[in-house]
Length: 214
Image 1: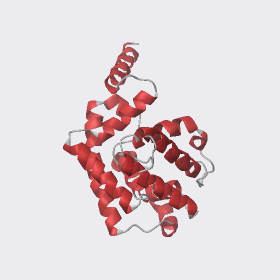
Image 2: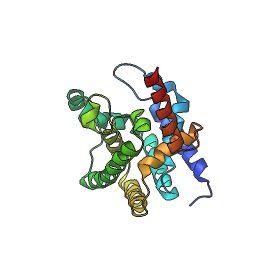
Image 3: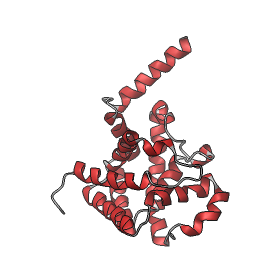
Image 4: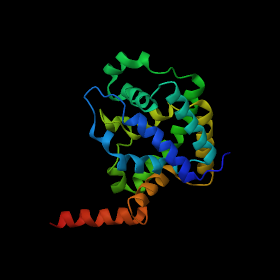
């Protein structure tokens, strides 16, 4: 493995992702979030920090390969998401998306199965913080992409070697009793300047109680 720090590797990944995100085409025109580098950088870094170095290196290779072929993995992710959020529109574009092999789908479902349990635990322990983000499941999300659909669709854009490493990291975290869904939100809180997730949840609870009193 090349001599590079995790921070540097994640920087490279986010730069590649941003190039795809900011140029992805939307039916309704350019979205404001496509010009919001600060939020994009924090959200993507929060997620990438939970993966091991070899997992991140494999994903970077996926991005570089796709870029070299003129493929936009971020656009593919949003295309896959439409299967749930906009099924009619999805039928019109599904043939333009890369086919998903049975092996890839099996890996994605295994990862999402573990993360689904973690997301439910996170929502129970940190309901206010969790309420600021996406709905937990597609049944709750409607046209708004839920956590399960977002993660599933993103993972479909990864290569099978990268997914195998993601599953290894996911299972290892589960076996040591660590919740990566919570860890991602903790990373987000830290990057926004909060000392910890418990403190952020408590601060939001106090603010909510004050509003009720008023």
